[in-house]
Image (cartoon, rainbow, N blue to C red):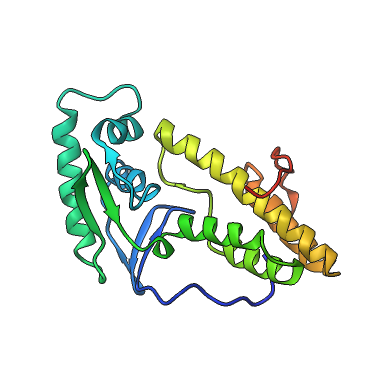
Length: 218
């Protein structure tokens, strides 16, 4: 997407990515997060970073309505492996038991989802010039569909919800850019969004339009 240059995020060496495949980065090094179900456990904690998530909620987010026998033992095993992964980055995120649940303690600005929401909320308070730039920074955090490598029912629902938030931000950014007389940037950005949302193989310019409709910034 062609957008104006914007200031980057704060200098944070630990970065948790949910707006695309689930990833944990320590500087320029990607940390191995294990199999998909283990990544789902981490994502289920990261979307509520700083807030306790109960065991029952974690089980529902990872196994939907069909947990296997001994599911708690499996969950504890994943949590142990996640702690080992978190130990590879500095500053080290905490994973603690609190108020009957597990809490991922991590700077909200280190989680792309929380930074995206912070920036879109901040953009609401700004005039068009600042609004467009801040929304551009928020949209640049996306590397693909949210939780792109996860397939649980919970992950699919979160992906759908966040896709609407992304489109809301894109339309708000486009409106601000049009009001400051930058139609070329808007056309290029919307063309890129159409390409990304288009299903099926084939040359990028031949793909069909997406079915998502417009909405407002969340």
